[in-house]
Figure 1 (cartoon, rainbow, N blue to C red):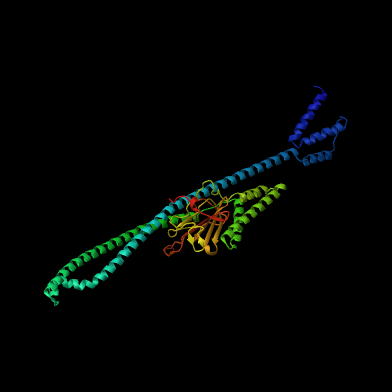
Figure 2 (spheres, one colour):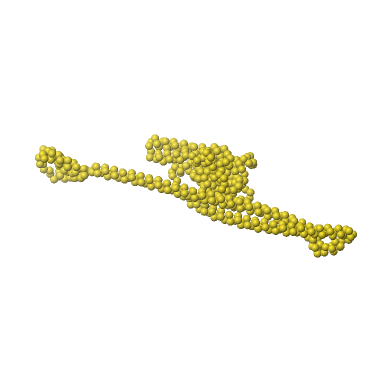
Length: 448
């Protein structure tokens, strides 16, 4: 091997070693210094070697440091991805759990609605039995009052029939006539007495039937109370994990509800909420567009909020969709029937005491508070321009902005017998399409 080739190999080795060890810098500097001596052996003073060593130690391991920083950045990026995946998985799990709990509440409300329907039926049977018993007792009392007037005559005739007739100064033919009349009267009185006894027995039977109906009603009420307590615990224990976008929807709904509370009419309240929702969606879209233009890091979150605000409240009622009947009970007043202020624009359902009220559709709660003469009022946006109004509740279990499923409990009627039997209306339901009242009957599912 020639001297030139040997020298080239040595230089390559020095360059390779330099990549992995900072001390190779010293060797390279010495070689360059010797080349500066014309290839002759040069002597370096001790202080010169010291300068070279210090300089070599001060040179940063640029490639190693860059590699280390790259690895750290990659690790941070991977950790961020894993954290995002864990957060997404946690949110998905929370949403699934919330959906499961909601489903349990919907099923519990459906089961309870059947019990409440049985309570209403048992109450009607009890009312009918009480009416029959009361009428029988009134008829018996009238019969007994009439019969009491002739009881003394009946007793005397029963004991002394001939003497009673002979005691009256009559001619023989008149006395005989009186005796025949008395005999016929006695027979009629005996028939009346038998009828009175039968009537009394019938009244006693009706009284016993009423007591049996009352016991059945009490059992139904106890079952309803027990099931209602379970559902109450489910409602109280519901844990809602919501996203930032859902919080934006709730905040917008609360602002819209505050504006609706200032309206004078129900139609004005719904119009105010529609306008407020539209403005909130427009503002969110404008904010998201601004952040997108400037490529801000929080642009995706703003886009999610805008999308959530622009999303329909629910699937709507078009295409043959049906609503869940909110309570179990008879229709006391149908849509369009005469009312104090003209044809009724809603329906009134009779309910069991303390009955739970379910959402008729899937959507969002837009209003939940007392309003004017409606009392405690719920307005649920079903989507597609449809809103359901529920009034007359004793308790509200849904908050403004809350997403609800069809059949999910959203409130409760007064749990007092007096409130139910005092003749006050039950649950009022009104369906509105683009703010105008519409007959809800064709949209309601048959009650189970």
